[in-house]
Length: 241
Image 1 (spheres, rainbow, N blue to C red):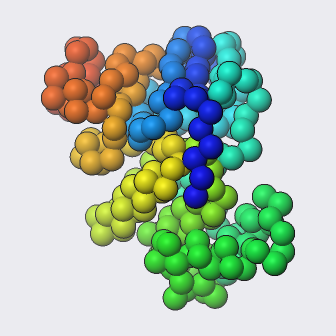
Image 2: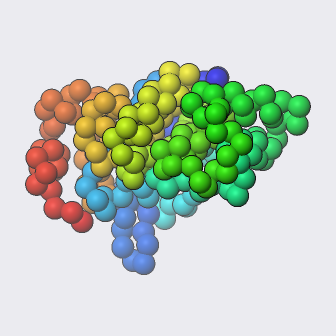
């Protein structure tokens, strides 16, 4: 895996806003995201976590503001995103990874070896020929990670990747997230699970009603949050929005 970082802050959000049906969902967010750490976005349901991530990834266009990558507005090709419920193609587990590599333009002779390696890294080599859609929820999420990791992304976005998994499958996915980060890929992740955020985050982006209220190292955030909104969220008192 390669990192390819050109800047300590490759992803910069400048006054980013997003509205839908007249409602402001993301409100004037400015951030410089550090390439060297795992960034976890947390906040109450409806705070705008997934929308902010989709804006970063380019699935949504901002209503106002801009996003730059290493000082440029064009999105890098070396990025990937894994959703809470990943879409599995009507192919085998191996076929799902092969298809992603084909779309990425990898030469045919390399694809099979690369795809098998990707499945081995996530512990799915034994089910390579099994239809992806009959795999368990945890196996499908690991396959989604394998499919993304095989692309050697500079940055990987993870949107609530364990929200629908049992504790055992969640633990397996968390190990893979650490491994992907250790390989040099920048992780940006959303979660509503405070325990998971404590285990995985190097830095926390805390959203409240579409605004970044705190952006701080994780240990500082969990030890002593600065805002009243974060204090309430940590105690489970912040109302669902």
